Amino acid sequence: MTANVLFAGRPDAWPAYEPLLRAEFARLGVPANLRNEFAPEEVDYIIFAPNGPVSDFTPFTRLKAVLSLWAGVEKITPNASLTVPLTRMVDSGLEQGMTEWVAGHSLRYHLGMDTHILDQNGRWEPKAPPLAKDRNVTVLGLGALGTASAQALAALGFQVSGWSRTQKEIEGVSCFAGADGLKEALAKAEIVILLLPDTPATENTLNAETLAMLPRGAKIINPGRGPLIDDGALLAALDSGQVGHATLDVFRIEPLPPEHPYWAHPNVTVTPHIASETRESTAAEVIAENIRRAEAGEPLLHLVDRSLGY
Image (cartoon, rainbow, N blue to C red):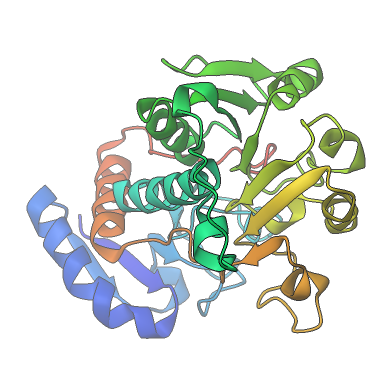
């Protein structure tokens, strides 16, 4: 039986995704009728992004699953009209892009590159940084992106700790969990990387209390989600020197408003939500494989637990 698959991502993404998805369906032998327009009652699967045309799933009466093109699903899970299984995007391109961005900014902090690139002022200070083995880095969030980033940093020789809500075991990474584990993970963290999902339980993970747990002068890197940080608490910690610098890629409001104090703060680097993004070629592989699995009665990959929000 041929499955009807609706592409409901951003309309201008359709020309890029269409040939890739068709090629993957053919490669996997999945009989699929792929379109960007269908009568709702005819649709079996929706390839979805929150910035696409679908927000109400009620008319899709024979829908089997919704397959998100985004890694974050916080904008989808509250939708009461969505009652079928939901998957999120976890693909090799997304992981590789995030790993490269995290490693680059971690090395930037570790090597003190800003001093030489941004703050020359005629000073000659031949002071080499420590080796990576003497630098403590903590990754908050050990899902697919956090694990990949932690493993990459460990491979570079850093002393890497990781924290998650549930206990994980990752080779080369000291893993912590729970409230006591968070305190221990932050206690030696010279660089902190946030890769947690955005849920009510993770909002303001870095706040006045947890920022005070860090060694003085610690650096913050947030490519995860804006609400993970209490902005007022971070600005206060930057002003006091408790936090030495913050590189922020995600924000509660995007684009970041021009009047936001992050823009003008001398110890904040703002990047415009570019740490990583879904790559069409690798995303098409994941989507097609999940539809193959669903049609074959096999478990879906990257299934979202909506009670947890990820």
